[in-house]
Image (tube, rainbow, N blue to C red; front, side, top):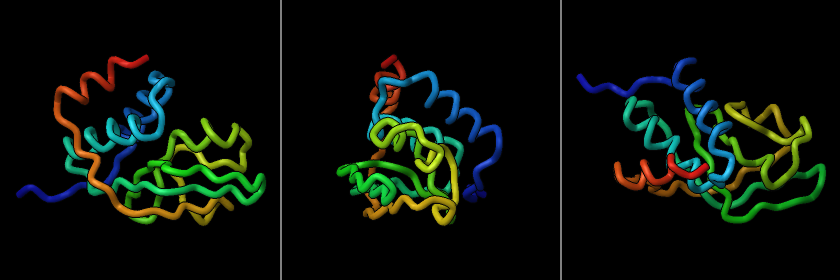
Length: 123
């Protein structure tokens, strides 16, 4: 059977390593790379886009991309736009643990093997 899997520690670490190594990839590129890897591992997830609002600073990030896995959010690029304060979410987290408000719609961000390789070649 080809049942969907849940996110395991090894897969999360792989995604974290890529996020740390590929600092030039913004939220859209990194979301595509992460989704490609999650799809390859048959891990159920949704790619999302629209906006992120940080009440502490009253900042809004439009056209922001992230991944939802179960009741959690996977976002390695919120701090790119909102700063590195501990109040800004990062990595895999329960959205109830942060004041940040994610409002979005699911979007298909499927990429080809070729585009995946190109995105990984970005520094």
